[in-house]
Length: 219
Image: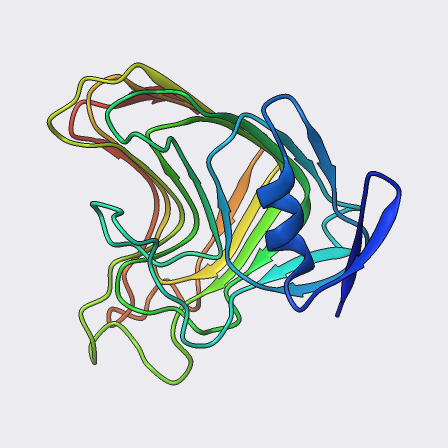
């Protein structure tokens, strides 16, 4: 696990280097994440670029006992949240690329690997995996899970764009990708989505892509 990061040429030791480094960024910055395993929740509310060292080298892992961001109207729990600070105004535009988001089988009800809320986002060369709860299945709990979930306040007509390309979403229960609300424009290119297990197992809900509640897009 990485235990330090470099800011303005200074190496800073930290128990949560990725979270602290993200907090220091300003609009327009590029945050380069080196090879390693980062057990953290990453909350992004600035227009920045986040670049890992590759799908097989940089891993953002969902912690045990993860929590939702205070004040988030949807109360989702996620390893990576991309959002605009004022949920009614579109102010955040993020590129995230070249890494893996690993749910570690630690998902809870209302969990997404990457949750995009009221923001523009481009997700490139990313793997989202293991978005389920270890030891449970669809028949034993009321799940609402997705590899990538895109949403905004239902009372707001927000024209936002999310592009997902060269991405892998696997080992999930419920949905691979969900795009909701009027004004949401989803584009999916060169992306592979496959679920948790046998598609003939009727106890598992494993949809690929759902676009609804006024959202539109192309695949």
